[in-house]
Amino acid sequence: MIFTPTPLEGAMLVVPERRQDARGWFARIYCEKEFAERGLPERMVQTNLSLTRNAGTMRGMHFQKAPHAEDKLVRCARGAIWDAIIDLRPQSPTYCQWFGAELSEDNGRMLLVPKGFAHGFVSLTDDAAVTYQVSAFYTPEAEGGLRWDDPAFGIEWPVPVRDASDKDRSWPPFQREVQ
Image 1: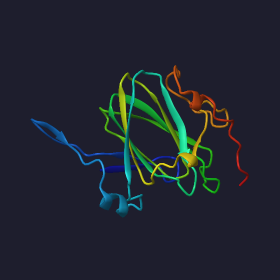
Image 2 (image 1 turned 60 degrees about the horizontal axis):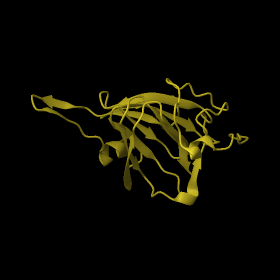
Image 3 (image 1 turned 90 degrees about the vertical axis):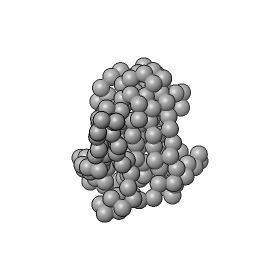
């Protein structure tokens, strides 16, 4: 696997190295040893899968509050998404900054989202399938979220958002913590 740091402290793009032959290809998408060697989260306790039917659909921006915060390894297994993260850790040098990248079936990239980040994506294709490996079990009462269009962050989405859940439309405006 190839690990490339993003501009946000602790977040990483991970690209599986494909071994190809006439039959197709094989790639490792997670290795506890390789993650541990880089000081990255090693324990993933749950894997989730979402299917987004229509291009332009927003999912996010979501996070789990401490002590139930989770690291996520996000991968688009079919189609393409534009994935975005926001650093919500008040003591971080990249607090309130965002990063986005295209994850697709073709490019094979994954995004490692550290604890303390909000995460979301807009689908670039119909029928986009996304897997999330997470380091903590989902706890409904610890769920939090931000609006994808909150001016506090100014995320530059590559396509217009045409659909979002009522919950994602109703998150309150972000209140910045004083550092």
